[in-house]
Image 1: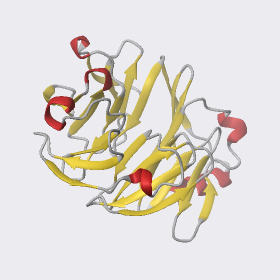
Image 2 (image 1 turned 90 degrees about the vertical axis):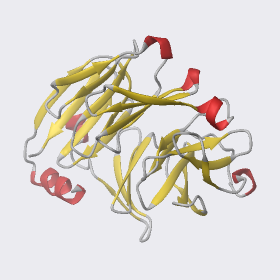
Image 3 (image 1 turned 90 degrees about the horizontal axis):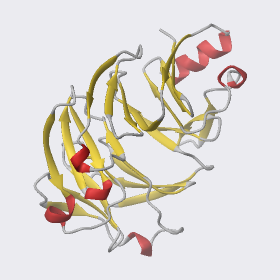
Image 4 (image 1 turned 180 degrees about the vertical axis):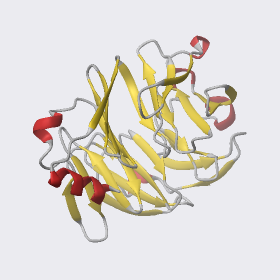
Length: 261
């Protein structure tokens, strides 16, 4: 998929752009190309790949929404960090339930959480520096060792991701820790300062200040996917994602979708 994008770039073919205007605190995508956003008013919105709004939800009683996990397109996870709640929505953002992370897990101030491959919950416990997995009722299924004893950096968890093969924890601006699906630590990966990342077929795709890098951990090969297009795209302020033949760029005034289909 990314190789196809590189091929299109080098051939100089034009792309159809869609501009989604608005101030968004957070955005992500699902594997179907749909786009999910959190507005400054904590609206949770879903758009298709052409920028058409499909649905919207706002549960003001839950406070400030901070994160969306759309890795399962049929069940969307939204973290309300201030309330320590993880809320579940269907694919049209209808409410389907929630987990009170403090009451069920007895952990306060959870900073990062994500869906596990089997629709459970991965989270980082800041009280004992462990990566843990639980089901939605709060039953603890597995956990790592104390990561402060093996990390070579101060732990400041920012992003957590389960791709069905491994679990990835961004613990610093330039560091990923990699675990197996049982929470066993495998290794750490050092990258230049990056904002967001995805994993596709064991490759790590991550965004820096104005680059999108495709990195193969086994061979250490890095490719700048945006090479030759940076004058067209300009600098982006926040994050960037890739789904199928589309690039999604989050900038100060909205989200730009570049379609190569």
